[in-house]
Image 1 (cartoon, rainbow, N blue to C red):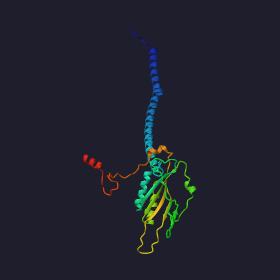
Image 2 (image 1 turned 180 degrees about the horizontal axis):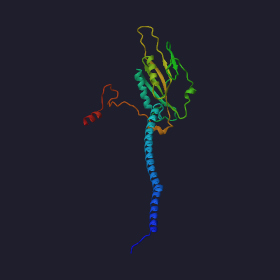
Image 3 (image 1 turned 135 degrees about the vertical axis):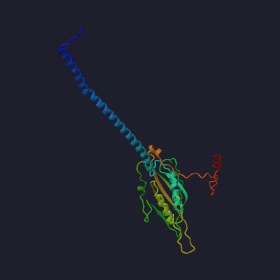
Length: 270
């Protein structure tokens, strides 16, 4: 039996087929394509956000590194520890540059207890009394200057909150007054914030004959450096201490390179 469709039925089936095609096309344009476009947009947005995140992480790492470097550089001026060892090296540098000799040094701190790395100050002797033909001069200056400047002790002792000071009393011998000035100038050129608080020296006898010779200038000097112990978070960023390599001498008083047997045995083993 053959199925015969009338023209009317064929028209109905044709119309129904066209409606299906139109519905599919409408769904494609109205739903599928917007979703696909949104998906592409989301992927592009994700890639952009990932690139932005990588850039931020790189900048954060560089910023963290720069922060460590900047805090280390700042601590060369104002450390969070007394750093007495570094201060001693700076004093030795001034000693060499000015051709002077440091006879003694005594460290003290204004804290209630002596901080780690400092040395308790020994009692300092009173300055020698005036003698005939000699002149005693006391200077209290913030910098090397021809004119003596007196500093009010109340102002000098007033420190910002959290700032501590470590002081050192030096007994020094310089060949001339020019070398004294060079010693002080070298100290004040240090990166670390410090103040030459006091200088006491006694001038020699006046030269009256050709046989007279200049006597070395012996004087005492008080140097004050500052630090901030409350910034404990920055103790890991302290500047490195630039110390000379050990000489490995058997006798530290020997003027010759009398190295220890340990270094010799190490060299032989190698």
